[in-house]
Length: 60
Image (cartoon, rainbow, N blue to C red; front, side):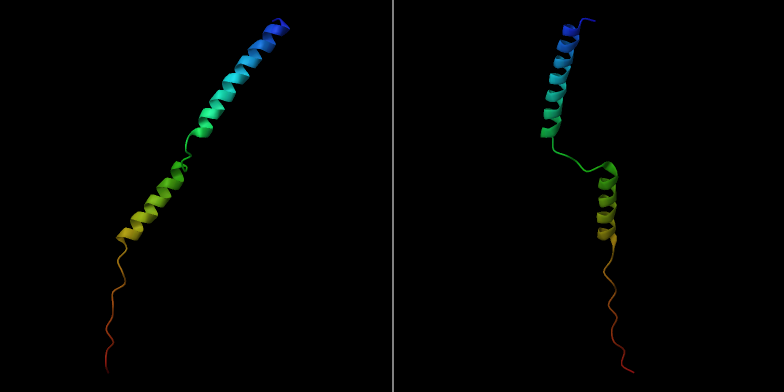
């Protein structure tokens, strides 16, 4: 392959990669699926948890 052609192809591909990187950088980031699932399970557990039963003082 001629060196000028190789350099031109490299330049075109570099421009494409820069555009893709800019698009990805603009997207809002989401937490990994494992983190989302863990937080969901914690939230569910907190909703299902009952407050502790109140005990009345016994007079002896």
